[in-house]
Image (cartoon, rainbow, N blue to C red; front, side, top):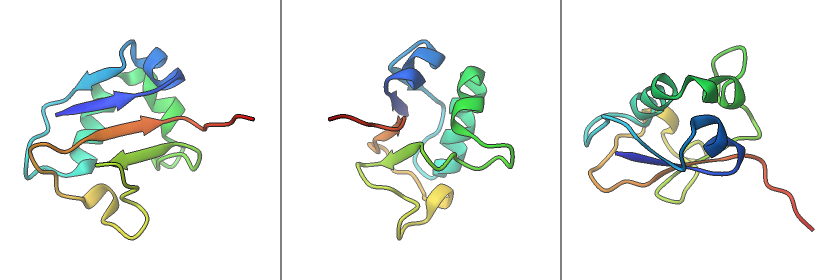
Length: 92
């Protein structure tokens, strides 16, 4: 399974696309832990001192926020799921 990373998150990981060993039946939390395990420089950027996803980081599962009306990290993954992490976005 692949994570897409954007802006400073891609810079911290050294890649815009990060492969993890998560597969169908695993959870989003499993895939997230694998991402951080393979790219430890991401952890202080995306996780707070309590181990929770920082409020300003956006995690998307198939284009949707799994924490808004979804199962969050307990979301069960399917084969072709798309995973992405975004830093805060601003513009004008």
